[in-house]
Image 1 (spheres, protein in one colour):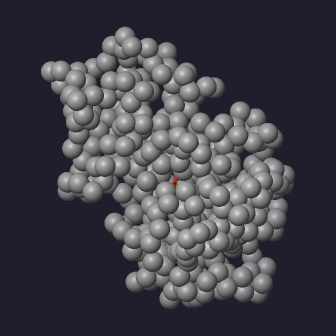
Image 2 (image 1 turned 90 degrees about the vertical axis):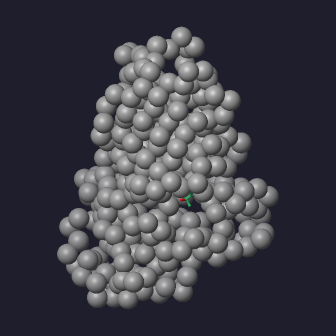
Length: 363
Ligand code: PMV
């Protein structure tokens, strides 16, 4: 598909007002997106498990203005309170998606958003938040076009979400989503996420992700800045190549359910992501001493028990502990016995692979 296919015709017959709500989950990348080109086009492809418990719920109320406004007209309530610091990000998002939803200035919107995960848990809500908002806005366009297929709707929602936050494009559907062009993955695209189209062994269908909340504060360096530092990075080209190779290797691993090989790729991807941060100029560190302590304990646990718990990291200090359903009893016991002590206030979140966004209120 090409970008122009997401531009609707100008004679949309849209409602005067209405209310829509969507719930979108977060996701955790196995092969990481780090580095981008213009318009949030990824420098390398990525793949993620869609999560289930960590999600954003967004209610969108809209009302037609008597005449189109000069600027975007909206109120934003986060957990029931006005949140002026989020407004610039939404304004930028509206500006980027306006060519594809040309009716945005015709309405006043009230955006009410809540997260299922605790406020300032260190879990970014941009992926789930931008996915939920994109779905709500696109539903307004869909209301005028009964012939919009589910496939097109999901692609366009992912395309719009990408323009809010790159990884958000992987939060529309479940359970394994690939984003970014890769020669060996049919229909893969830089423009939106697609469901992984090949065989996935049953062991991956209900994988667990226990998120160990090491540090709940603000990150010292945002992902936007981190992505930017991949421009001119001395290892960038090799890293981008490696992401393609890891995706190719995962195809066989997903089909065969080879957990040892899965672990090797997933942990290497997490450490490579942080190695890119440590070798950027300026260099920076997002891991904390507790992050490393947890990683070492996971390695020891695996060696001692022969089980398959492994870690991944996003752009922060928290550790995502991934493990198969069949090993959940021993692994959760390990979390309680050995890892909780490294979590801020002993907090962790039990999540698992999920099925994607859900509509809560229809137009
Ligand atoms: O979507 P962004 O711009 O917040 O970047 C996310 C980058 C990582 O979480 C580190 C990796 C990924 O693929 O999700």
